[in-house]
Length: 420
Image (cartoon, rainbow, N blue to C red; front, side, top):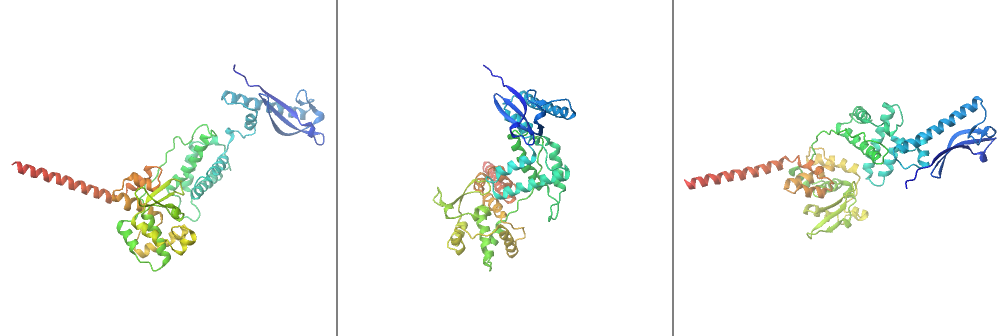
């Protein structure tokens, strides 16, 4: 048998806690014998209260205004109950109270979402990724302040126009200390992070629809710089008279032959070196950024570097495979290294990872699926970015095809001559 919800509203005063003969006014919601009280933030003189009628006595102007207020409260609560009923939601006294106070799901704000998302990711994503989200959050609050002239908005106010306006704001924003405004790809990254927050709100049912449903990102194609075989060879063989530059060069070269990022190399210890299924040494770890497992067989040049630093005083203290150095100093020293080795490219440590993907692996015929696995990419589409820039590999493959076709043609001609 189908049961029907019981619902009632009672307006009452808390006479037991009255002060100076005045008691606080409350609304009590009862649904299926479960109660929830709402303070109406008004004081009522006990002597003027009609308990049986839940209203003030008399017909004075003050009494009429208070009674009008009470009727408005009752009407609002009844409308909330009706809306929830029409939405076929499970109706509770607490839900009606939360909706009345603006604490329900339909009354969540953008800052509520930002706070919730920040708490959700702070212990699950890498610190660098969390910082990137914080930067995006900062731009959202600045946009609200400068363009919307407010500090917050309800989530149901988010629409396609809000996204377009925010995108336009970022394009015209000039960050302090930067030589120019944001580039297209930087703007897209901020919008994508904002989109992840909004998508979370949609999945939490804080939003009735996704405002990003028609929005499409537009990235500018960029070339991923990497070292050619000659540049890598020159870097490997160059003699650095300063030890700190030699250590940084070795870290860079190790990354070139393993594809492991700076933060992950800094955390490597002897526990990460294992004997693989082929009987050779492998590095087995997880990417700090995504927690994705990474398994990389060690090539001879990367093995030599492990041996070189095995008993180094700095690694014995740190317990790591390589001497620890900050990312800022590392990239600063790479500028000196590039100048000394005659490399004109903007040498950054991340370029080593690009070099592994292109010059060391893909160019030498390693399948892209294998490269993607070693890089710890969760999508092969990410690895395909590197595959697009290997002109030398395309040239080599086409030359090999040209040789095959020429050889076939030569064989056909010889056969024709033999028949004649």
